[in-house]
Image 1 (tube, rainbow, N blue to C red):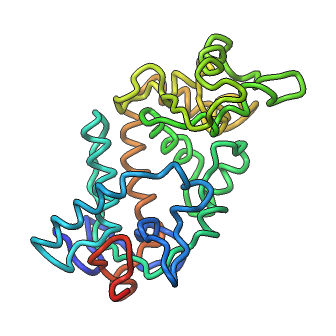
Image 2: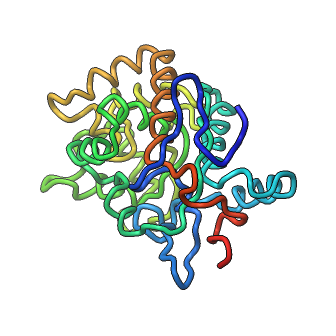
Length: 278
């Protein structure tokens, strides 16, 4: 498969133009006279990072084949590479996306899943972009690596209910997290999303949920919500890493295919931080 400016086929699948929020590189745009950056949206502020790495990749590509590879495709390929290099599955990245001409901070504020979301909210947000319950559980498994700030989970540690901490947290794990994130401490201290194999892409995330060691509320809800359809999927992936990997690869393809810009829609930015000509 080669990079191009229009839809690119892989077997019977190809990217088609979309009209809604999707995989279009809008997150990479900085604030400007005409842009209100998604980087400052509540789910992204002080959380998303690595933009300088994208800048370096884009600069190297532009020096070799200018105006050919979009920032949106760079993000899609980088996601695949990071998973593979951490021991996870590989998949064929569909290419041919173009970059958005604007950002949608309001949309980012409402559509991106929150670490505080109950399961019903998570399911609704995934469903709104065509991703089912299996995709929700599968893509949440990306929390097999990475870190989260205390502010994203500390409400679970103290006054989550009238009687105290979130009862779905393993008691010894609760003690560890309270020591790391004291009640009046800094909300920016980092905790590993997976306390067992923090830098490896594997299925331990699901075993953690079974042991009540999901760091975020949005993690543990997948297993601890009574009667939820997600429980059996968690149990399946915990016992079968190959099934998780297979579903993760397909779910990443599906997520990368959410309303991409192709053909003559959008543009191929020369600088991922700004619209061409600005």
